[in-house]
Length: 321
Image 1 (cartoon, one colour):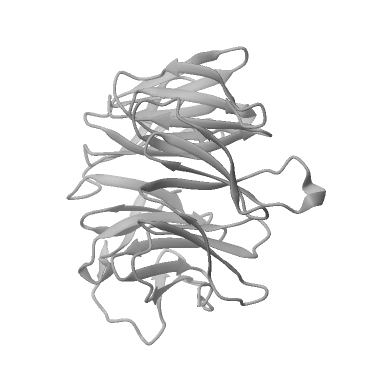
Image 2 (image 1 turned 45 degrees about the vertical axis):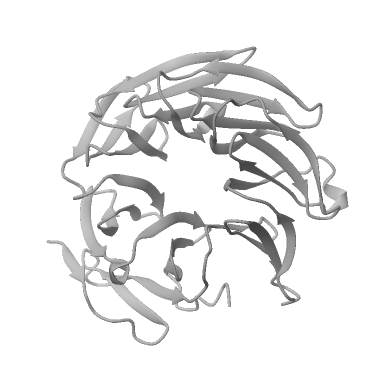
């Protein structure tokens, strides 16, 4: 049975126990960090920099040197940000891709400047994905998915992928990609000379807000129809449905580790045992609305108006202090 977390935090962390594991209970530590006005977090691959995206600014901090936060970009309306692979790895140059409304920008932390900019989308970009070296995929509210060559600085491919806004694109094994949309569908694509539709998954009754790859050939989706669905995309069928998974629209799904995944909506953050497809516990974030959630390595960051909740299996959670 679901247990609602109503206890107050004990100083810095609160241990959440997964009751299924009676002999060796699994613990999820919940930490609260008081950092204001954060919208996005990105921990880069060398574990040295953390980039935080505010409404009007992107900043970074060198964790190894514990130096002061440095402002690198002053801009508005940043909606997505990712790290991308550098062609010349010997330079130790870190590149990031971010979007402002319908514009994609590639930025060099070393040179502290925008290297390239693309305005091919008509409406706002909803997600950014590194497909391969020098190739970036974007999805947009203009119903399209586009593939960009950031070195040659042009759009390689473009497809009208859905009949409504494309909410998310993810990379699957074997270089397939999957997209979900407000048109209630999920699609799997192969990229060769052009986009080729491999499968289309239909069954949600409302907008599909997010998708993740559960295991090979299995996709998990969450929707405003309040369900979580498990899909065998090879055979184009839904293999399991968790009904009434929330009282509000389910906005996003992320992994915490190999036995728990997390969804969030207006009624809180929920922890699920994905093997048994059952709800473990609900955390209401002290009643605060969560505006963004992401997983970085063994951490899940849930950003709220006055700070960050951090979920992890590790007790030492002062990653951002």
